[in-house]
Length: 106
Image (tube, rainbow, N blue to C red):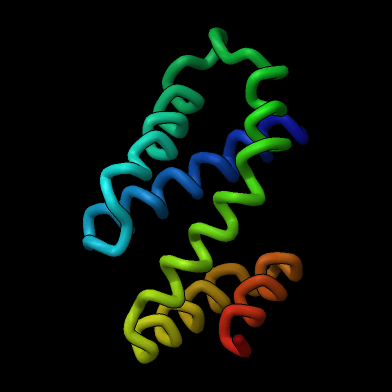
């Protein structure tokens, strides 16, 4: 179940980044995140668990910081609207709500 959760979270991260790229908030340089999502979703049995764990350990914190930069680069009203929408969608996930609320207060 934990493995499935990790894959699902990377799916969400990849979709979100695709949206940021398409809307012009992120550059094509972040395309690797979307490509990684596509590999995880479509390769099924060819995924190396150790490689995925290595990515979690080395790239997740820098990605978090990059996403924070992108969020703060948005128009404040758009950012607040997005955060409110995401809080509503994730109201059952306290760790997500805490992270989203930290974006409001900074």
